[in-house]
Image 1 (spheres, rainbow, N blue to C red):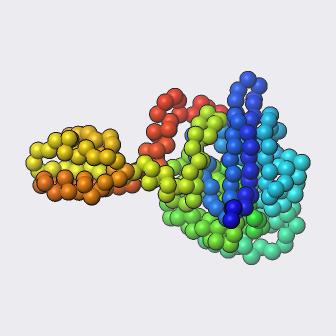
Image 2: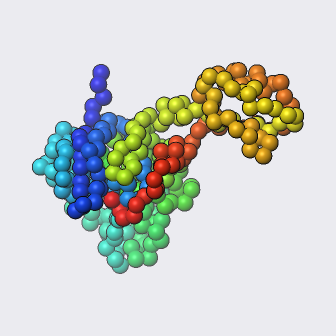
Image 3: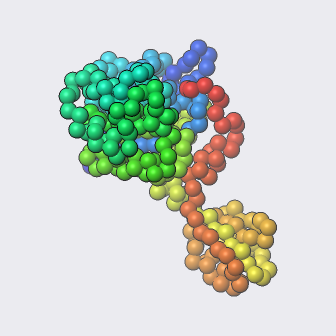
Length: 303
């Protein structure tokens, strides 16, 4: 059975004069998944998100959300979408509680139950004034307002900046939203964040998608990195097997990437005296750097 698509982007192009914001981008987000949209500042993440919400007029291409045209049916779509913009702002000198209740009223909702629950979990003081908040607490307000109306789709543009404990609580909140059937589309340049929370990741470079893949499949494709320190001499040739790549020596250590034939590598290691050994999953950060190895990482602006 084919997975229901909540967001369908087909050949999206957005030009800023002669500058390419996004070019010929096609991407789908499935119902009930957490999709990570990864790339540095200027890669095209915000342009894509704003185009989805009709906050930007696209140059070419089609976008449907819930099967509706993103521009023609934008009001209907926004009623079913919680949104955290990257440049989320606050009305100055009002209590957080009053500000959030005002946003609820704009949505036509009077229940503050979920607002209060989210604020408690994120340790957000609702009686503080907005101009007294730290950057992290301002982000908490943004997170609460995007989730408190219990929408079917949550779009978040760079929800980074919480302290480590709050970040973990934020992840738990998103996972619970997902279990309730919500769809979450979040952009980030925080690689660990995407790897920790997302089911799939789309990597964008200079306005063009370069990979869309399941996190686990990506990790399997890229393999595991093995680092070994020996107490006796070794030769690189001993570890040349099918499915083993990037074999090198570094300060007497053996470093290699294993895609398959781990058993053969372990047998070869058993012929030596091992001082230290570390086997780790090839991180998304390494993958990201691999894709961005050529050219500049980010080209300025907030495209």
